[in-house]
Length: 255
Image 1 (cartoon, rainbow, N blue to C red):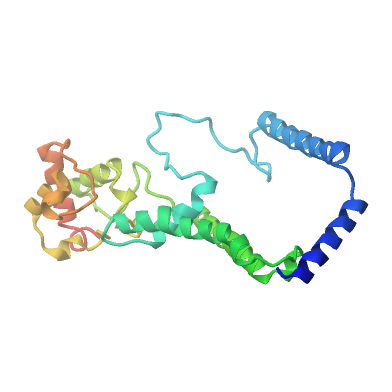
Image 2: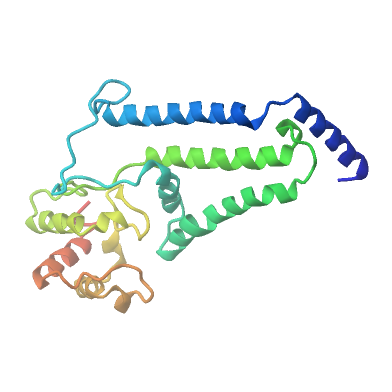
């Protein structure tokens, strides 16, 4: 800021201060009105009937013992939820680090750095294109990712169907185990499920064998060094064999 700009700023500031209104009671009064209205809205929403804006009931009371509920993050985490789905791959840590640390922190640093990059004396936002662009870009990005996350397909609830078993008892039992143990949270199968782990729709084509699958389920790191998949050593031998048989049939016997 050069000398002329400083002088112009001081003149504008003095004029605005002379024509303005005092903080007390004018600003305090306005803040009180807005705060009271906001608290009133919160209280009204808390005691209002459990209905949506279209008049439909929100849903049944929460049942902590349910086995069919598919958990989803709160709305303010939907953008992270969508980022996790975008940065997918064989390596579990890549999507986690990118979606929960690198990308959000880049956006935060951009917003924090804006006042230091755009240091002009102009206060009118339409005359500060860099500040306007960076703020709008970040907000629109977060809003878009939140929308995408809110409308992304849900996971698989217990009792769901991933592949057609056609009466095969092993397939049906394995599918129940697969869903109950949360495998669908990370793996995609039959067009459904997560994307943090590899797609298992054609697992049989890898030709790994049942014993490899069992060893991998017991201790993933023993077969895939560095794997972030949790071990399922708590499953019985029969359950492990059922799951391994199911995995080795995906893409051939089970579609």
